[in-house]
Amino acid sequence: MKPVFFAAAVALLISSSAFAQVPPDIAAGIRKIGPIVDVPNTTKLYAPLFKDMKEQYADVKVVRDIAYGPDPLNKLDVFTPQTAQTGGRMVVVFVHGGGFERGDKHQPRSPFNDNLMLFLNQHGMVGVDINYRLAPKNHWPDAQQDMASVVRWVKANIGQYGGDPNRVVLWGVSAGASLIATYLSHPEFYGPDGHGVKGAILHSGFYVNGPEGSNYFGHDPKQLKESSSLEGMKKLNIPLQISHTEVDLPDAIKQADNANGELCAAGHCPTYLVYKDHSHISQMYSVGTPDTSVSGPVLKFLTSIK
Image (cartoon, rainbow, N blue to C red; front, top):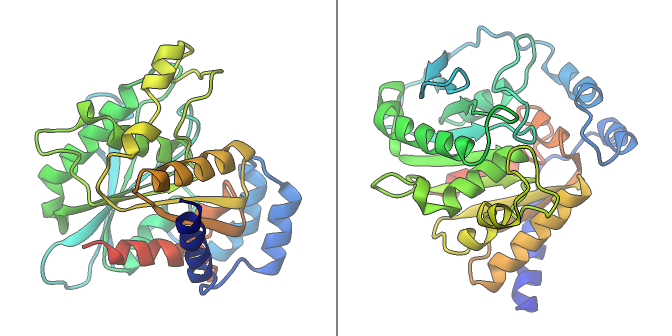
């Protein structure tokens, strides 16, 4: 299997290099921060590129805090481009990270994660940004059940927001990627029509729970194994894009490399990318700026899905 894995990796690294890369001063700042989660200092690097961004977005209809379930965290935002188009638009659901303990779909007066939604709108897609239940109040499988509820809500309602319920893609980072992976790899969460999506983009996710456990997944060895996603991912028949960054958390790099190797060995190679000069945080902050090192491959993947 080694020649197949090597050939796929080389081709994808070459294709990603065709896009505009991280500006040298920002790349230097990212390397100075290092392979850690440092939101304040990473924000200082990318926020100036969004200085003219106002929340009254031109040519975009935004509906915030739509309830998709009974919990206060069961809320989502929908961003729809206000440009003419025949037929329903592709729908991309974004799932934030935060270790299943923190994070939010929207922070007032911050360009993140609205930058992701506006990027999707600029390319003719409907963006859906979600919140989900978190530890320590909630535990496995609450967030996965929320993910299932989101998919069901989108299938039933997105048509009135201009989206095509039959063209839904999931996109997540860190714990958000892990949440998507665990939803897709556990059919017990599916509705009667299956998982309901056409593909998934997984940035810096975690696919096998470590023996140390967590506040969300618990500490029981049997449950940690059962709530991991890698074995179930091998049975998926939808396209996956899996990635990590060059300056990522060490475990995120190991998890992505392992997932890619295991999926290729199972005959289901994903689109696999390593984002040069980016960190665990900066990769998503770059979307919507002239730095297209992440957004370029994401868009290429999305437009390849039929």
